[in-house]
Image (tube, rainbow, N blue to C red; front, top):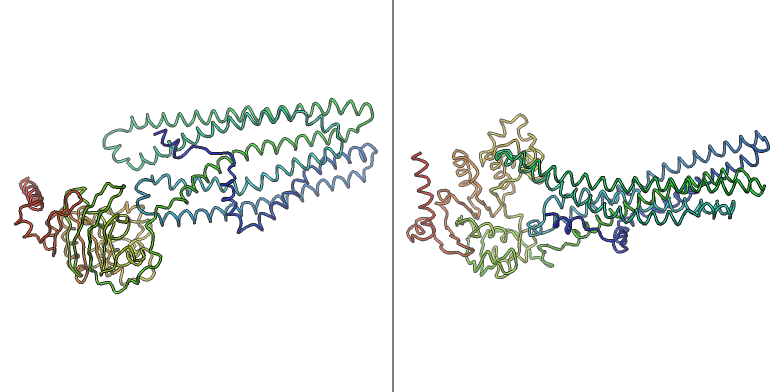
Length: 597
């Protein structure tokens, strides 16, 4: 597992990748006026800091040394004014940078979400949900740090250093070289720090990914853990992963704990050199006290942005790793592509035909082979077979959740591959065994927030499937809040809502994928009565394990190992004494055992 995370999640590329940065900067283009404004503000804010040591030098050498109170007061006001001006400009700079960051990550999140919605189900079959969520949350947040306090704010640190160097060399060249003599040691320390932190950062991210994955998996499966009394052993596993994460963080903290005091030490050495060399020059009367004081302040200001640039390096490294993963998702082209010139698809009757269809989820591993059948408009056709026979796969390719490798699927004589996906699915409603309800209200879950579906149609759909009585019994009726995945509703109630949802869209083709397998007998009876009404005038495909629910179907297709083995109505198939007969006998015996018990 660790190796998988290392390869998929936490392998860090370059700390700076020009290609990735070019793509990232593309998101800033719409807001380039804010970037230009931020850079201009940066230049002025960076200059105002070194101005204060210059004013201090003037105050000491020109006014304090000559007891000029009036001049000292003017310098005092100038210092105070520079602080106020810097604070005001810093406010606008921070505001615009955060604004830029928020606008940019909003656009990136929107793009990721739109792209993810277009991806084929084949992509989601192989990609953990937590990984996709991480792209939209953690990885995008890392880019926010880059845009709001990384790229442009790094300019602030660079401009500050450049302005300080300008003022220092303008004031005294010799003392400047003495002060900067510690830089080689500082550069070497920074190089070591950057390399070590890069390694520790990789480990921290690796162990964090393992921790997040473990938490997500075990919270989701909490009922299984409690049923089998695995709390203690799972806690021990979690403690081990948590300990690894803690150790990785401690290692990272160690490098910071060494680097920053080193920077402070070098800063203090630089101050010592200023006092040693500058003091000697003052004694020789070739330098003033004001210059020494100014250089002491320059040193303090000079080393602060160097520390900040080390932090910016981490932001850059995180952003590069995150952007690489984000662009990998955005570049994924696992699509079920729409035709360039889709045919007009309206006034659907509901005739369905499969011709020589072959289909595989993985290349050459066919789960459906040589599928041929026809369903006339208004017919109800049941599909039965053992688990893994390929029943649900038929639905997946009919709705073009997946594309077939060979053959053709026709609706009213039109190949589904030539129909716009949105138009195709508008005429097909599916009720699945595993019902998914969204957070919201019962009304929104039936209408799926489609404003074109009137209130009356929502209620009528609920009445038809028998959901209306239990909905009316709820405190807020159709406005009752539905928790995540419908946690506050029973399995039967969720199933009834899914039936109402399917009906609300008035589909011409209705697909029931083992839709009654999760409900009790009373609810099933209620649904069967509703199904008889809703199937009138519609083409229906019913996938069922309970053969008792499909005995009145116009046609029953029996599948086995991806192929159609038998076709006929209930009585005809029983008379053949083939696969269907055996399935019926097995279920009949099970029912007899249940009755006897």
